[in-house]
Amino acid sequence: MESVLDEVSRFCATQLQRYGECVDREGPHFGDRCLELKREVTRCASDNVSAVRAVKEKCSSQIEVYERCLQNNAADPSACAEQVRALYDCTHQ
Image: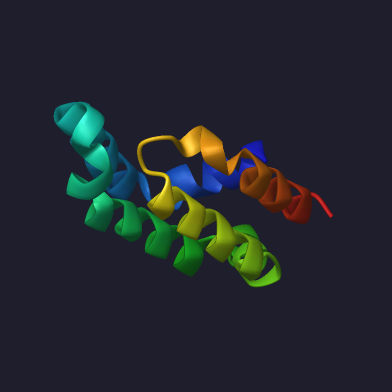
């Protein structure tokens, strides 16, 4: 996992920095206000890191369920523990 994070950091340093700055600046409201920057990080990682692409393909249904849960439970992300466990399990098969 560390090597994947290293690759994302190497290929997407600018996007990660901009997203991190937005999160720091916006505090508890970062979810909506930094969404486009988050998408830029995701696109960059998908375009440049093969391990990220592979997980997105392999676990697409789990990712979709988890993202939908987060949208429906924005005030309480801990409500998505079951979905994050399913996603974790998929990534480690």
